[in-house]
Length: 251
Ligand SMILES: O=c1ccn([C@@H]2O[C@H](COP(=O)(O)O)[C@@H](O)[C@H]2O)c(=O)[nH]1
Image 1 (cartoon, rainbow, N blue to C red):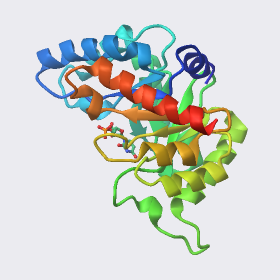
Image 2: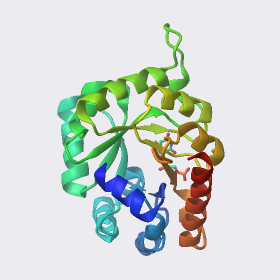
Image 3: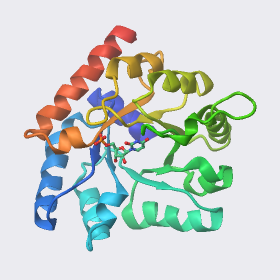
């Protein structure tokens, strides 16, 4: 969290650059280096999605190469959506932190607190899925108590953050109303927000619903819209500026 806060303050950005590489091994190696170098000045964080690396024979090697190319001081969130019993989760955590060297991970909170806790190592950070950006998200299901699963999960994650101090939420940009409810339930935690760009989330509504009073608290992710842009640096800069315009209005 300290690394993220320092980066956000120094570079004045809430943009998370998603790395979902597609193409031949040769193209991907070159494009990854290019996208990281061109977007780094505008990135509060990078988010490589593990699936796009594991689908290649040299995936873990490529991921470690990416880690080395990220400039010092920019946090890397490994988007693995890990979720298993604690004994197994411990091994996923070792992979993410010790093998890859990530600063943070995404975790699936579906299996409960003990599945999240192994990732909450001191000095590391966890973004746990609370409300995903896909249309058929099961977190919209309503419990007998009358609250949606997403809100129940958010309360679980607020409790975990009170214990560990390093738990944030994943909240999709495609449902700003739900994101606003999560903000009520988790008034200080950081949210990682995918769904802007290719998935059509509305940036203004998301920022209005989720920004903290000091204009922080959200990491806005964009993957395909940057990866596929002719000029990745320009795409990142434009999105960062758009986010900052809204931050100025809201703060
Ligand atoms: O609810 C979620 C959780 C994670 N993701 C991931 O974020 C990026 C989004 O990519 P775009 O190209 O910007 O749509 C991708 O890695 C997803 O797996 C998500 O979209 N929604």
